[in-house]
Length: 369
Image 1: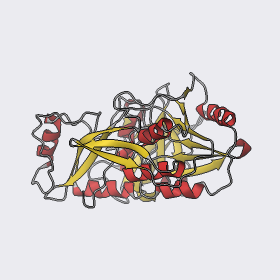
Image 2: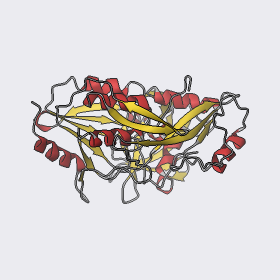
Image 3: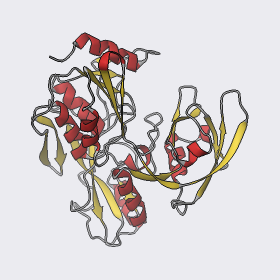
Image 4: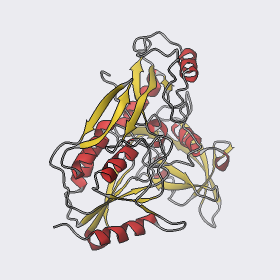
């Protein structure tokens, strides 16, 4: 794989850096569902160095049934790599869509263009450029915030129409900048419980989680809601923080089984709850499944997305990258979550706040010895 990283998530480019996803039916640009290429596919086993045009590459992916596969130009993959390194081009804005179909701002990056323009969480996003936001998949809204082809550069502009509850519609023209994404945040809840939110598994996330745990705590809520996946090593490293070695899972790579093993010495005593939802995908599902199978954590929330495939990128002759599905992963107990997702130990009922439920569950686990 050389300098290219194995990832449990072709969706990272659009989703992980935004922290925003819609219903599972929506897909990021050039990527869709969860199928391993058919046995009779014309796609080469390893296309590294091949001279393929974009049209040829996408035709091969389509012909092979690899709907999670993706083609990136050299520039696009450079931006993808920035995302894996915790940097992204955008305006510092995350969006989500509620059950009422309304597109709203869910998070604003401090000191980013959106924050400087006065946009705040809860504001409704009405239009992006000339298109109504509610009529676009959330993944397309995210892609537009980052910029279409030819717009993905520092200083390019995007026009947004936003409205605060009961207020006037404001039309704002924002310039895109290169931002540092904060994938790990931590906050103390009641009775010394520490909630650590991980939005995606980019470079350095496992160490960030470890650093967050240095704060005094009696229990941990690991919040993986909306986590779209990312780098395998970071997910395994995070698992190792809570496990004393042993299996985190395995994946099939072109017929061969590769074992994923946690490093030894993790904390196995502190009460741990993992929060998941329909936006928990790929590497995040593997982590939650490992902690569930190993009886290390109680999983709370709603059924996860169900993306159980592994992608491997290959560099083509012109510097472009073809990302191909190479196999499926399994949890330590041998479960494949592909297409089914992970069922929580304690499901959140309709209208029930999963965060509050997590606190009740962790209270029932007691405190560490």
